[in-house]
Amino acid sequence: MGAGLAGVTTAWYLARDGHEVVVIDREPEVAAAASFANTGIIAASRAYPWSAGELGRTLRYDPELWLWVMQHVVLRSGRSYRRVLDAKVRLVRYSHEMMRALAAEIGFRAFTRGVLYLYRDADDLERAWQRAAPMRSRGIELERLDLPAVSALEPGLDASRVTGALYAPGDEAADSAAFARELAARCRALGVGFYLENEIQAIEPLDVRVREIVTRRGRVRGDAFVCALGVMDRKLREQLGTHVPVYPVKGFSATLPVLRAEAAPRHALIDESRRVALAPLGAEVRVTGGAEFAGYGREHEPQDFAPLYDTLKQLYPGAVDYGRARVRACQRPMTPETTPRFGTGRYQNLWFNIGLGHMGFAMAAGAGRITADLVSGRPGAIDLEGLRIRRH
Image (cartoon, rainbow, N blue to C red; front, side, top):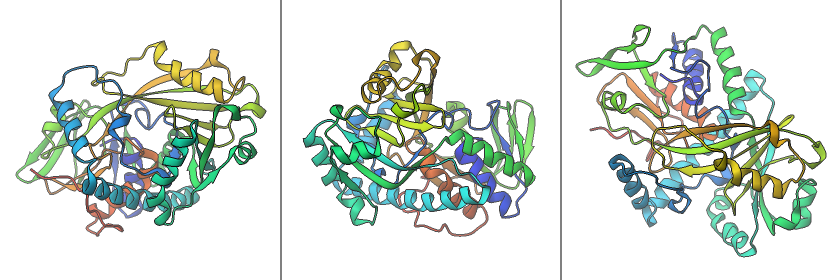
C-alpha cells in the first residue's frame, strides 16, 4: 500500500526475495505525492532530530496536532534526544549504503556528490560546527569551509551573502521521483503489478490477520500487507490496528529552468539561516522550504514561494527563469521523533514502513530493505530500537 519511495523500494526488495508483489496507490503515477518534488538530498551528516524551533505556523486547533506537538517537544529533552539521534543516524547511514548499492544495480547515476550547509552569521556557523561533533565522532566526514573554499566549490554563489559553510563530501542529491520511477520500471520487469488511481478504502481483518483490502476498483487479497502510505485518511488509520503517529507537515517547492549555467548552483545546499534548500537537477534548479501545520490540505498561494525565490535570488542572482517556475505544496508524513516506524501491530501480517517525511530519500532504501526482511521473517540488518511501531 503506497507507491512513493517507501513503497517502491519495499516492492523491489520483496520481489528480489521471490515474493509476488502488487503495489496499490490512489495517485495516477508512482512518486506523485511527498516523493515527487522534494530537494532530494541524502544527508547522513544532517540526521538530527527535527527541532521544535523549526516548526512553522500552526494554523488551526486540532487535538491530533497538539498531541503530536507535545510528544515532539518531550522527545527533544536530554536522554530522549540522544536516543532519537542514535536511531536516526543508524538508519540513515545504513540506508545511504543501501541506496548506493541499489542505484548502482539499476544503473541510476544522476547523483550530485557533496552537499553544502551555508551560514550567514559567524556565530551560527560556530554553533553548527559544535553541534556536528556527534556526527564527526560517528565517522561522518564534515569540513568547515571559509569563503574562498566555498567560492571554489560554488563559483556562481554571491559569497557576500554568507560567512562560511559546512561541507559533507559524502552526502548526495538527485531527483527522488526520477529514481522512484526508474526503480518502478525495474520492479515491473520483475513482475510487480502497479494498481494506480486506486484508492484504498478499507482494511478487512479476520481475527489477528488482515484478509484483504477494499479499494475503489475492488478487493485485493494477500498473504502479507505492507502499509507504506504517507499522509493517510483518519478513517483508514483507525482500521490499521495500531496507533499511527503521522501528521502532515506542509512544505513548498519550485522547480525552475536554468538561464545561465555558470551562475547556477553546482552542489545541493541548504541555507541554514533561512531553512531553504537548493539542488541542481540538470537543466533545472529545485528550491524547497517551509514547514507549516495546516491540516490535510495542499493548497498554496504565491506568497508561500516568496521566501524561496528571495533566497535563490540572493545566492544565485540571474541563474534561473522565475517566469517558468513549476510550484507545488506537499504534505510530509512526519512522526513526532521524525524517524520512521517499522514492524507489526495488532495484525500479524500487516507490516508498517511509515513516517519518512523528514528525510524520505535518505531513508527509503534502508527502510525498504528492513521491511522486506521483516516480511520474510529475517531480522533487520540494523538494531530497530526506537524505530518500531508501537502496538496498542
